[in-house]
Image: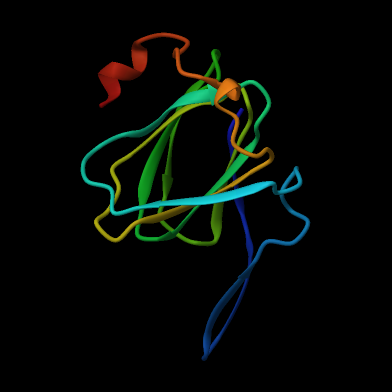
Length: 128
């Protein structure tokens, strides 16, 4: 199941420094970021093997998650919060603020065969 974690952040009068060091439960094989999103939804899939970690490094967005047992919506509005997504976590990203930048670390390089687009149920449709 998806889990929100706090990233270690150092703050002083000069600003903030957030560190990602030995906290992700996988080796990073791919990094991508999503920005300039209108009112569209992104994602709408889960994976066979890929694990992911999502951080909204600017602005905010929401991520709906369904692992086939539990449905939950996470609000990402601070760059020191990281959402860990397991392969079974079918997720949709939405409600992007105009300035949002969502950075995602993935455990695997891109492979179209790793994606599963069918949701566990259509219950997510009533949430948007």
